[in-house]
Structures are given as C-alpha cells and as structure tokens.
Image 1 (spheres, helix red, strand yellow):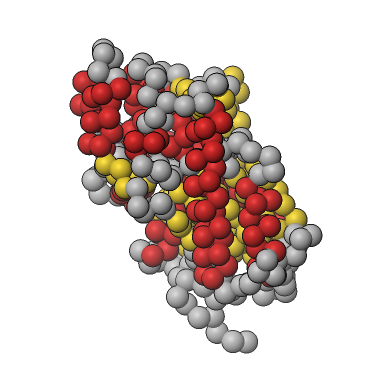
Image 2 (tube, rainbow, N blue to C red; image 1 turned 180 degrees about the horizontal axis):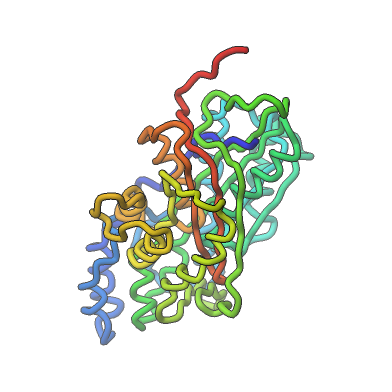
Length: 368
C-alpha cells in the first residue's frame, strides 16, 4: 500500500500579480483588441497569482530563447526549494530517495529539471544512480499522473521512497502579441509554482499502518486519453516563445471523462473528499457535475470549495495544482479515513486520478 506525505509548495512570493495588474497591462498591449472589455468583465475566478519575474518582464515580447531563459531559471530555484521541503516533511535525507518522478511541461531544456535537481541533491548525499522518470508533455494532468506513477513504483518496491517533483513557470505562455479572445483569457489564469512530495510503502507488506506524517493512503490510480482531442488544448513552441492554444468549449471536455471514470471507480463508491484540478470556473463546475455534486462554489455539498479558493489565490498552476490542493486538504484536517478522489485533466485531452483515503499527518502510529 502506497502512502503520500504532505506536499511542499514553493511560490515566487516577491512577484504577487493581481488580476487588476494584468487588466492594466492589457489596457496598453491590447488596447485595440475588440475582445478587451469583454475579457476584463469576465469573472475568471482568479484574484492573484505568482510569477517568477515581475509582470513588466513577463509581458515583454522576446524570442523563445530569451523568454525560456528567465522562465527556466525561476523554475529551477523553486524546484530545489520544493524538493528539500518535501524531504523535510517526510523526515528523510537525499540519500533515502530511490526514484525521482518529475513533470515539467512549459520550460523546455535538455538535460531536464530532473537532472538539475539530482545534481543539486547529490551534493547533499543523494545517490547519482537514483532512478529517474521525467515527463515533459503532461501539462495540467501532471500531478495526478505522477502521483499514480509514484504509487505504482512504491507498491512494487516496498520500503523504497519516491520523490515527486512538479515545477512550472507557466508565466512563460503570457503572450502580449496575441489579442484574440482565448489568448487574452489565458493571460489571466496561469501562475508559477513548484510542488514536491514523497510517496512510499512499508517494507513489510503485511504492515498496513501509515508511516508517521503521511497524509493520504493511495489505493489505486487511473489514466485516460479521450480520443480525437489532440487540438483541444495545445502548447506550441514558436519563435517568440510558448503559446497555449485552446478550442472553444474545451473546458467541457471534462464531461467526456464521466463514463470511463465511473467504469474505473468501484461500484457504489463515492468520495467524501474531492481534490479537483482548478483549471478554471467552467472546469470546476463540469467536474462537480460529472461527479454528481452541486456545481456552484458556495452551494452546500460542493466538495470542491478548496479548489475554488486556491484558484482565486494562486491561479491555475498546471500539474502542480492538485498537489498544492493535497497539501491544503491535509492542513484542513479532513476526517481520517475519508474516501478521497484526486482528479485532473490535461492536454490531449487526458484524465488522471488517484483514489484512496485521507490521513491525519499529525497522527503518530502506535508502536507494535
């Protein structure tokens, strides 16, 4: 049985960007767009977010090389801090990690962030022969995907520890040269962060006691590709940087996960805790609807309240978002043993989920 410790979360706190800041920037860069006032009037659910660089630099046009340089630099700093924080939360040293699973989609570079982080942690005792599973194309589904991958590894390698790491500088897709409706909207959604957590399993397969400090028992994981959706969400590498593209009504694609998700879930099983990817208001409403819950953020019985709150505070942080929500959920002390579903979707369109039970990370297991 695999267990996840509370994720460590890192944000570039010196660059807090408000939605009104972005509105003011668009007043200059998109003043001739016929969609400007319409976009400014929309409630996108995001009030603040963090960027690795000030808005003045993020909004400055440049080449792919120029923009990726500052985005990658900021992402790496956050990644190291998150990794060290995750080790601290799990009471482990770098030498105790056997496998590093990473997701990083918007800051292209080879070698990848996994090699960068391992190089830094080797200085602190990590083995250079640590196994690595890097992913560079997962996007927003990265959190659910990597947690499931880590749990699968932990289940088949009892006693070994997996470090999950998801750093993203999504501000790299902020493009002031695009003034169509969708491009203006995407300026308002994304934020930068890095999250990391440790996933492990007991060395004794008969020992079902959670390790001290764990926040979730992972029972099973799920991945799904919705056919014929390759252009619904896309990330393109162009000469002037990264461009995030979406088709009209893309957020409704989450509804196509309903039937395959229900087929995977045990018959009659219903989560008490839902950790849902905060892709935006429409995504959260559609997610609540396919799960059979009230969809309004303030409606009683909506299990996605924390998702709405984190969307407002930090925006859509891509694959890191559900791990941020796992940490937030653990801090809100849910009922230990509550049945839990962690669910995300990403470009492709792809779905990912993890099923299990929440645990109290402050509980100290009894000594046998």
